[in-house]
Length: 134
Image (cartoon, rainbow, N blue to C red):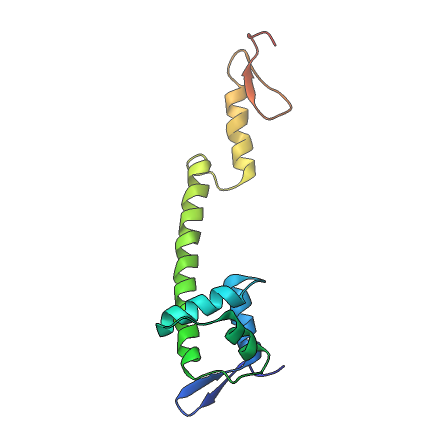
């Protein structure tokens, strides 16, 4: 496998393959324009998606500053991912009864509700009052 990043003195030399890999990791299939925007913001100067394309196809060499910009972008993405994961976990936990960590425990909770007089569970898993016509 081609080496993705090589060291040249103190600076990282980013290869076209690594640039494509990180671009797709951060932004998906249509990565060139958002990566151009991100790197341009890092540099403080607009960067054309055509430049990103040229770097990724070896038409132009990739400047040394791009390595640091990619590192910062990966750090930002990691923090965003961790924040989203924490939000997803919080929502998931609020959707389940307290202490419920698996579907079997949820089935037990439904079974306990079924023990009420006049209660029955239909095929949908919804507990209904059997004294109500329907």
